[in-house]
Image (cartoon, rainbow, N blue to C red; front, side, top):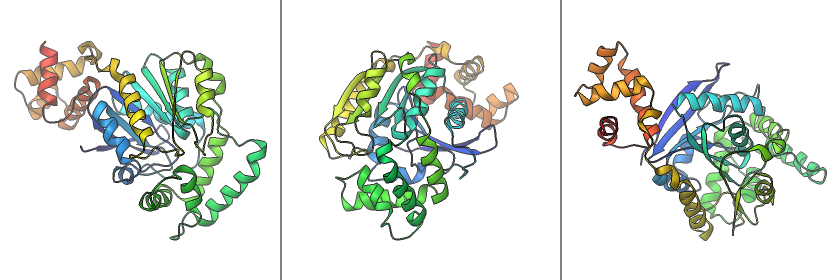
Length: 343
């Protein structure tokens, strides 16, 4: 399984990186606090998420501004800015209707998007999620210490300070997995952005939106999560008709060899199963159907581009959007898409 990495521009010019892989109904993953599209792809901590989700869905994920392959900018990391970036990415990826997986610190953005655009979101999965990120009065002293550790130790070759966060996120990990998580922190962003991002997330609160979420929702949460304890119960109790599944784990990021991962994978697959029904061809744009009909005549991309006075790159982009909408991938995607338009 391979991923395709692309870039787009936010309305303020910041470059945003996104990637696509897998096959099936589209599933948009709203980024958690730390991500790096390339680094995650080789990860002993994240790769099983990508492989297993790619088996059941066409996965679209991205690096938020300030992280990974996106521009490292901390000028505005507010909820509204992050939501606007997500709206830009949805358009760049050619998504029309899709499911959303909001993970950890990305969950408030996923919730805000589902609230603003219920006509586009088929299903919402929340994992290790919270609606509000700020520390309580009792936790404020601890948070001050965390921010001091980020400033002092984020960029150091020695992961001593970063290991504190690693132990919180994956306490049951092997040393190899912990070393990778240590390195992700240093690789994904710099200390200044890490501090700004953490502070911005603590100012985020979408609690008031929860009773108005109008899409089918599945909440998955580790029962001994040290990062966001008990927030899964609060989310499921506040979102109408949400279903809660508690996972037996201490890890904020489920590891591939623990039984809770099998439960997670099965629950997500079952929840998305209704979306595997063939997408109606009328969900494609007029231009996309026109291109498929020309492909059905035997024209290659260059001939299609000449016929429609488009660039070959634009034709290729239309095909990629068609594959995403129809849940197709691989070498047979073109033939399958043409067959659908002729059916």
